[in-house]
Image (cartoon, rainbow, N blue to C red):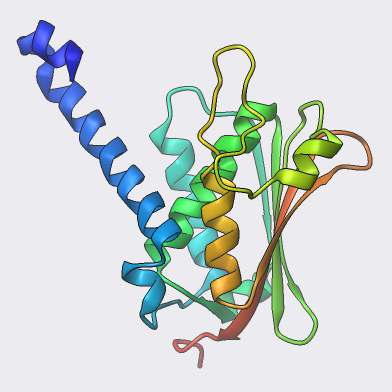
Length: 196
């Protein structure tokens, strides 16, 4: 907003960015408060297709996106998950942002699990989370991003975990066996209504 005031001729792109960030903040606050789409019965109809779109849109939205490998099981095209699709997209973007900040390449793997569950894993190639970060990840206002000007607000993982739990799922932060960080979302699946 300050840049827009100082250089009015450049105001339009700055204000568009500002508006988008305000909307993203609103979505995070809505998740934290438990309002809007969290309280209504919406669903993602095809988890596989939706995840591919969300990742593709994330890559297209940034000027400096990390190298990313996406591996989505075809079985996930035939199942959905409960919850607002826009909120799930925001969670996906937040987890991709975290992985990008930690270090690329990023590997996103999604697979169908037995007994009506799916798991989505976001793995980065960074140094890996500390034991304190693993223990405190998902607590509101705790952030491990405190170095090199990359501070966080500690609400992304909190919102993601809260929303996943609302629909019977779970989010875990782990350290990869070969280093790097791994965030896994375990989600209860539902039959895809559009499936023949």
